[in-house]
View 1 (cartoon, rainbow, N blue to C red):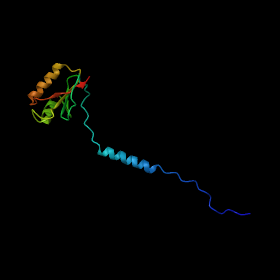
View 2 (view 1 turned 90 degrees about the vertical axis):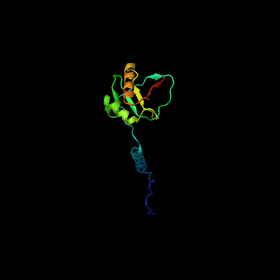
View 3 (view 1 turned 180 degrees about the horizontal axis):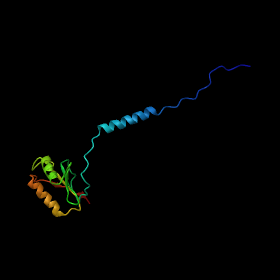
View 4 (view 1 turned 90 degrees about the horizontal axis):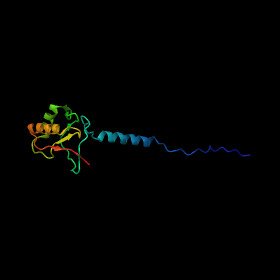
Length: 132
């Protein structure tokens, strides 16, 4: 009778998933660190609809809420108009500063806002609308 003294057969070792998880987390951290976040809008605005229009360019944006409140970056009310006028830079800048008014705001309030902007030195302001 012969005895078998050879080491027992081992099962093949499976591939570890830990290195792949490390790479995924490193990619996630990379994209989070290199991305730029936009400033949140001061309040929700639903623009009025238009039949046809151009795509808006990057410019300072003044928000007009449904209840007539003005907002620009961190400013609200009359301070928002002053900060918006200072940020826009002048009367004929390109691209033109934008006014995003809610679709439910009365036209008289939009007209009063445009008059206040003209008084502040901005004669060229684009009103943003959404396409129907």
